[in-house]
Amino acid sequence: MLTARTSSIAAAVLCAAAAALHAQDGLPASQFHSLRELIRPQAGESRWREVDWLTSLHEARLRAAAEGKPILLWSGGGAPPLGGC
Image (cartoon, rainbow, N blue to C red; front, side):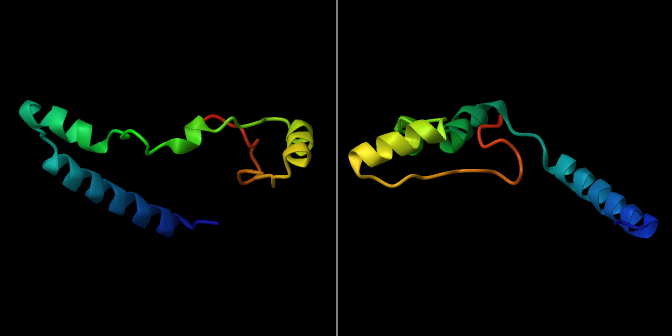
């Protein structure tokens, strides 16, 4: 549990960081498009989206047994495995 002092220090650090980041803001419009293209996913980078993922463990077990393949079970920290991102 955070103490009042720790919370105050954390708030002060966040405020100082926000001010510093704001000071660096100011991307010229001429550079926006080229920088945007650099950070966008490129062809072949998101190959996991091409996999025919199953949302039913029962169906996955049947399919894995029929194809002789393992199962990848993905679950996130107590939340439903297919929660929104």
